[in-house]
Image 1 (cartoon, one colour):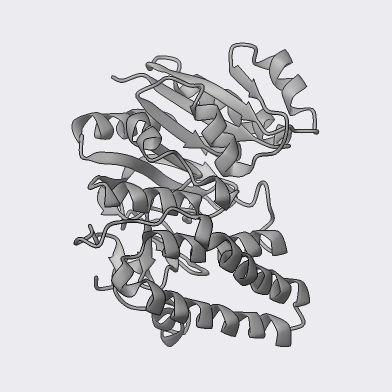
Image 2: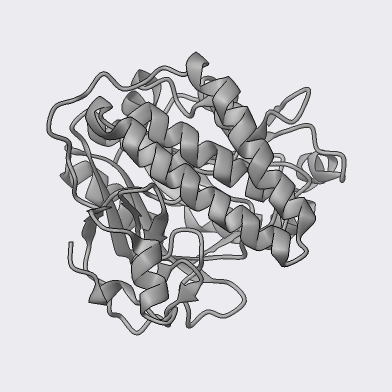
Length: 336
């Protein structure tokens, strides 16, 4: 089995480290793997607690909060391993969660990244929002998952227990080949946080590799551990980064038409926030569009206009299907 680095990026996550780091370390004691915590200048006592209670865990300390993208990029440049496991501090692992992921990667050299089944820590019969059982995307850049379409989260009854090729693996818990990660320059630092794993997986697919979900591996995710779900800053990052991702990765032939429609849909949602009295959310969407316009010219765009690997790409509008279904749409009803 290949050498594997399990890397947690921490920022003021002491309460999660106290709860979830021990079972993580115990789960990989007999594997060719090691745990690293990279700290984004936490101020909550995380570093001191780690040094006192887990001296065996390699600790990388940064001088400021570089975000998810900058933090991981800086950390992984300092870590040598065949595989990187990128995992949030608020993830509870189960027994034997890692072996199926690594075995799948070893057996499939065309696969550059994979993820486990991700269930909710607070309601363990249900999938978790951030990744569920593998990520997909529609033609306008809206992400969704096996087990979660927009706000509709399914109960796990084994309906998605077969391994399946997907479009993106969740940044909450994913395995990626270090060689591919570094070849692509890692995460895009401009994103800071949110959507960065979808952008990375899109670029991985453009190289000709595959992304898979391996549901025989199971973890539980708290979610919203760094930024709460109703945070205007999180909303801003999601709207801005989604546009940046489309600009970078869509073929030239459809880029502008798709982005125009996506921006129109964004503005419609901004107006809903405004009439609902959610002024901070309205401002977040408008700022996201303004900053996208400033930032897009500094991005490296894809030179690929060849036929792309479209597995995991939904050719319709998932938002339209969702609302036409009365917000009851489930993944198994989709036809790709």
